[in-house]
Amino acid sequence: MIRNLVRIVRWAGPYRARLFWGCVCSFFMTWAVAAPVVLAAWLLAQVADDARGVSQLDPSWVWLSLLAMVGCVLARFAFSYGKNRLQESIGYEVAAQERIDLGNVLKRVPLGYFAQNKTGDILATATTELGVLELQGMKMVDAVINGYVNLAAIVWFLFVLSPPAALAAVAGTAVSCLALASVNRASQRLTPAAHKATEDLTSDIVEYVRGLGTAKSYGHGGAAERPIRATIQRLKDARIAIELAFTPRNVVHLVAFKLASVGVVACAAWPFARGAMPLWVFLALCAFSFTVFSGVERVNDSAHMLGDLGDILDRLEELEGAEFIDEGGRDIPLDGHDIEFENLGFSYARDGSGQTLHDVSFSIPEGTTCAIVGPSGSGKTTIANLMMRFWDADSGEVRVGGRNVKDFTCDSLLSNFSAVFQSVYLFNDTVENNIRFGRPNATFAEVIDAAKRAQADEFVEGLPEGYRTLVGEGGSALSGGQKQRISIARALLKDAPIVILDEATASVDPENEALIQSAISELTRGKTVVVIAHRLATIENADQILVVEGGTVVQRGTHEQLLAEEGTYRKFVEIRSEAEGWRFGF
Ligand SMILES: Nc1ncnc2c1ncn2[C@@H]1O[C@H](COP(=O)(O)OP(=O)(O)OP(=O)(O)O)[C@@H](O)[C@H]1O
Image (cartoon, rainbow, N blue to C red; front, side, top):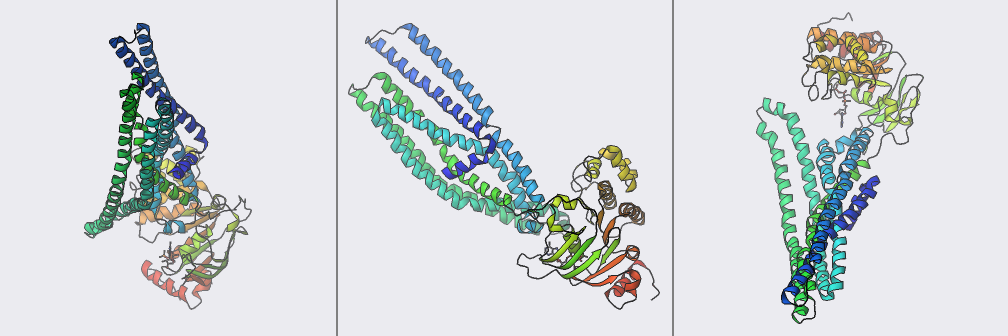
């Protein structure tokens, strides 16, 4: 429990001083609550003595006591306000920074990281779980620190009034601490399963929503729900197991305090009955017996919650400890933009088994177009991804502008690339902002100019709110061809010297195809272009064609050179010609 408490205090980082002063306010707040109890007990005793004729009560003391009580009430609210102002926002501020940091970490990890860590797990940690930490973290620190600091102060006060009553309080606290230690151990044992189930549930829901269209079209809605139902059951079981484990320990914790309260009253009643204790002390002890443990009684929830929060902190540390792909990289301005692969070997498996690419060597001179062709699964996309260092090669080297891609930071390397993929992803934002993503400081006029050159301006102007129209999640409010043109406008605005293009295989209508081709010609003019090509026209016009088969480059040359050779390329062209209705004279 203490360890997790210290970790949360550390997590508060630069806000630790505010956390400390918040605790100080909370401490004085507790005394502002306790003081009227003592005053009331003292006043009652004076009234009783006056009634019994033991002493005469001076009315001015009554007014002074009442005034002091009002002062305490006001002080309590002032300290409560101070505590809230200082502490309440810390969780939100730290969590906001944490989310930005997580975003920065995710930007710099290799794509393989997302295969090992499911999107849902990352999503659950950055949203739900970090949300629990942001809401509960500071409250728990406050509850535990103030709970025990105040208990210690009140026990000291009890000790001054009646040492046996203080001992009863200490004994109750000791038994409660044993129960809480056991809650904490149970929490460490049981909460990881609940957290895992929460993360899995998020993954399953993301997967379910993504696959809903496919599931519906095959009439398998029920089958798609099955993994979610199983995870919901697992989460329910994990949560119930936690409650079942905590209930008996919580009972011991609370009973220990209730018995200790009875002990305090007994320790006061015994000497009072024998006339060895003044009435006001007896009354004060009785009143205290009900309030002395109120702060720490709630610590049982905190002990459980601190276990939970410790687990969340573990997960955050794990995410933030991810290895950066560009660790030690530098910002390197490039003079040239040739691309070279030298004896490259690559496997998606971490242990290097099942090589996807092997012995890949080629070079693409600056300002030329290179078409990559080959059967499905041969490794074309992988080659393009390695140029942008989405992954790292296991052997050999990739160079851009004569520099090993490992020398760059990700941002510095990627500033040289514009990529247009087959499956376009648009952010759930306006058309304008989606285009501006290519160059965040572009003016509106530049955005429109890029859209015009990408043949997108006409349809954008026809949208309900023109460039201010929201495109929906992933661009769901636009057609495939429209999304393509927006993504080309984005790439045009970026104006990077190297363009990576994954040509659409899905057939688009002739009008859209003509518009997209015209936009692509605009994008690729004067650039170093790498195109994963499917259309014969693109392939024919390339300065160089790489034929990839079985994870390596099996043929390399111009269209004419490769057609003159027996081999994969010629077969490929025959098949494509038939598909496109072309005939070649060879
Ligand atoms: N993220 C990944 N994790 C593991 N294996 C992968 C991953 N991406 C691709 N592969 C595998 O690597 C091989 C090459 O895939 P790649 O996508 O590069 O082929 P491609 O030639 O672009 O195929 P296509 O023309 O169908 O897009 C395939 O066997 C594929 O299954």
